[in-house]
Image (cartoon, rainbow, N blue to C red; front, top):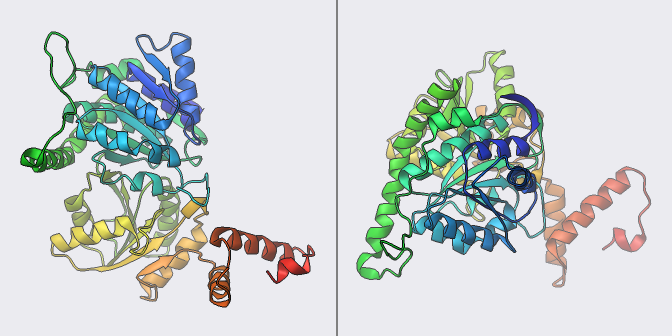
Length: 430
């Protein structure tokens, strides 16, 4: 049903249409509205046969999902940022045990310093945890991906994260065709677990495995990821047949057929990039964008084929591997290398901690790349004056103080000076 609705509310209704039997919840912004809305649906009886469990931590939330899934229940939870980190041990257990849990990650920066705004550092930190990771460009795709996630998870018996940008999507009110129960029933079969505890047929799940079999277990988990590369497009086509719209898949291309410059990105920023592409196309610039939906499994062959005819690609990422650079860009470069394709590549780190990514800044980055004047690794809109000020402070004195607080303090002080607000002398010379 087409609704003007907040993203989190749309997610809750889409998830409810999948008939989960266990929802385990612990609040952390910006996912809280999702589990709050689900709790209301359970309480009012709109989600019959579902056990809603309030737990004491994110670790407990994933642990309860593990228990519910092992017992044969379709299980769901949601988290973000530090909450995801707190449940990490159980996150690895869920994938290692092959449990088809679906979890929303409302992407938010990881501290410290504390930051509640959006980037992709939380889910990226779990890229090797064994979970599939699907990234939504908008709230329509996020709702659709949740429905597809249960189908994919249960077919392969593997857990799936649906990643949607915190606040940008979770708290945005926009038009969403929310999947309804009758539609979902045509697409998503009743839950039939590949494994579950049964008193009449006792077994061990999650037992210790020694060196004689551990490699084989991990190899089979690796194969599950490769199987997902084939299953995800198949599920997308079946979804389109039932719901009448394209959504999900491994990746989406926009004006890439003749593009000499292709931007690779994930999540909500793709919408802004598409606007920039349209503006540049109107002036004759052959440019396109790849919206990466499936980060895990990583669609190396599809990426290489989409980039094959380009002269250069620019990866714009809301994450960083410290001391290395962009995570998505390194995956794309590896895919091109395996395919024997050599094109110019640029890594652009942008939007960390919720910093705005503007069309002006995107145009500037593209201009520099197309003139071959862009550094291989670039931090979009980096305030070099603030950085150099902190480096100089560290050179000047051993007891230079806390880095994050120093940078924030001087950023505020500079703003106040620009606004004509007097500063105490000791503040100015600190």
